[in-house]
Image (cartoon, rainbow, N blue to C red):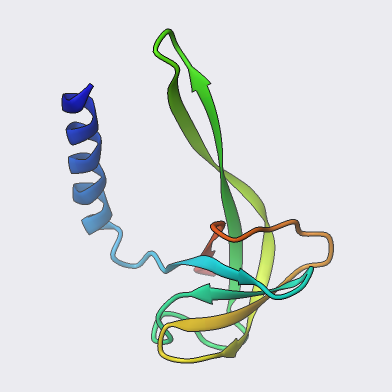
Amino acid sequence: MKKKIILTLTATFILGGCASTMHRGIVAMKVDSRLAHVGINKTEVSVGDHVELYGNQCIRAGKDGERSCKKVEKGHGQVAEILGDNYVSVKFDEGVSFQEGDFIEKHSH
């Protein structure tokens, strides 16, 4: 079990180093039904940038009840305001359901 965790973490760090253009932030606070404060460096996004919202869908599987999670798309939004060095305000499209802990990735059109 420990070897599997170490191998997974090692692979994540190695592959993460290759994805230097990935701009990802975490929903830190849900302001209202469409607006969230997201933790992301202000140099990674600009007002008006389009973002994709994702969440994790996790289940317990196998004999040992190991948890397995997958990334699921939840909707779109747009950076509305830069709040400081490490936070921005994102307004999601009407009907998009989100919660603290969900994450965004900047679209690279």
